[in-house]
Image (cartoon, rainbow, N blue to C red):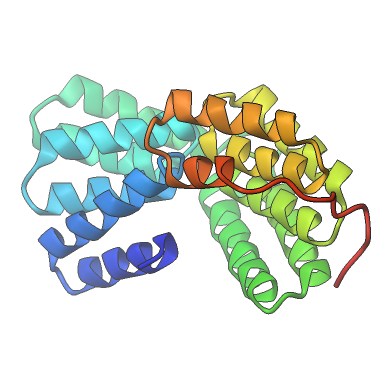
Length: 239
């Protein structure tokens, strides 16, 4: 199974109250893609429902380290703390959730904007799967305008730029993500791939080696380092 299939299996198991199956699938997904806050949050949910609250808290904390504005992770962390009798910490976690959900200067609450952004992302994923990268870019840009803190969507936007041959735009987007969140491994993996597509092989290898320093067993970074060198793809636009 690929990572998306593992996540889908985890969600399906959660919906069917098969918590051990969800934990197994989501743990494997988290090992493959350690920078996905959503996977960490879902794993935390599964652990909590399976009666492992301390382990659940660790996953909620990991999700929040990746995305400090993740309202649902704050809420589920607060609920778990409350269930453990850690009431002062729970109150603070509820306050953080409220603050995140009611940030000033936004047309929608953070929870609503998150739902809208994820809907745009899902449509963008569909267009990308069909090879229609122009339409994928439009959907990802709409999602990013709602939630620029969703690093996975910004990385998908950059990858769609890359698939269209807009390598400079892809580099700029990924460089901005990494300037704000240097720990986000998936953006660094993608940036290495953009360098590779540009024929900048030493820069690509440097990014992937940096990934392996952060996550020594990262499968994509390790595999990409073994790719042969070839002629750059150039800046040719595609659909």
